[in-house]
Image (cartoon, rainbow, N blue to C red; front, side, top):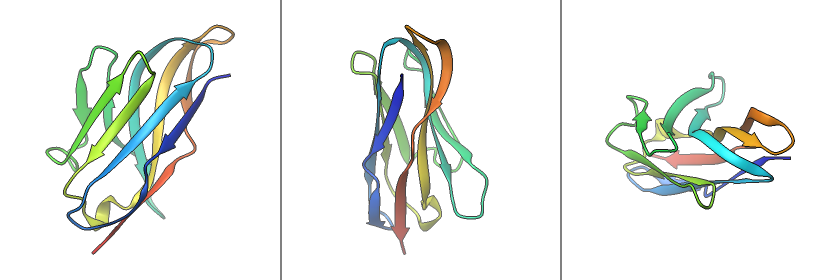
Length: 120
């Protein structure tokens, strides 16, 4: 069974920084792109940032220039570095990955989410 576990959320003042981490565990053979989404109360889940296994990245317009994403393929982890945080970044942040595992083959997984709250 593959699991994605996020960590690093919390409360921060506007203009501050946070780093979110997501670790994939289980009988993993390979991981395709790893992606962060977020969902604010009363809103739909939205794309934040993604990174391929080769390191190619893509970001939502709302976070370009403020967030970066990195991954460690050997450790099956992905980090989201969030700078210049704004109150509108407040949301529950979810890790998503498409993973190949021994028992299941390729399928997608979601983490349980980690809350980020930015105070003004």
